Image 1 (cartoon, rainbow, N blue to C red):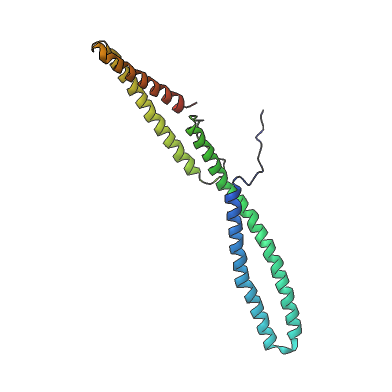
Image 2 (cartoon, rainbow, N blue to C red):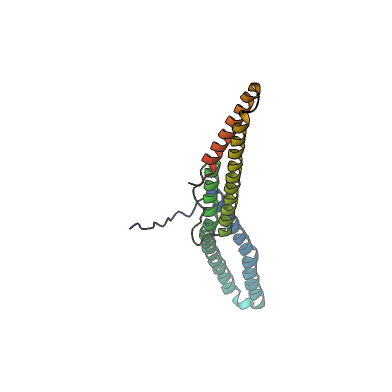
Amino acid sequence: MTQKVRRLIYIVDPKFQIKFSLLLCFVVFISIALFFHPLISGVLDNLAIKYPQVSTEVNELKDQSIKLLILWEIAFILITFVSCIIMTHRIAGPVYKLKRYLMNIRNGVIDGKLEFRAGDYLQDLADEVNLTVDSIQSRFQQDSVYISEATTYLKNLKVSIPDDKKVVVEEIIKKLKEIEESMTENFSEE
């Protein structure tokens, strides 16, 4: 009985995943820096102005609040970064698998249906690619049948044409057979 091994590699496409995660972390950092820092400073400055007798304690509270906010911001950014890596993994994984699948098709190998892991995003993309590949295979099968019929027709025609034209017809038959073999090799499902 084979056991399914779960991969723990979350960075499949580092260029995309890290860039996206860092960009989102930057947006979070700027948002916090532009909103919470001024808000806390403003509230505590107003308290110090309104109640001058406790201004020293308010300034200490302000310093502690800013330090705590910075620590909270760092923790939140780290959580955001890790979350982004996990979320982008569900996008980058299917894109990586799609690239490999298309590369195989380009190399003449159709290796079954394209399937993504359960829970991955872009499931409808796999369905669309599979429908497209099925359509292409169907067209190639129809074209292959037509080429086979045309080859048979030309072989029969070759008997009744002058000898000087038989060489041309033989070359056409040869080329059609090469095309048919290429289509059969490259676009038949394995």
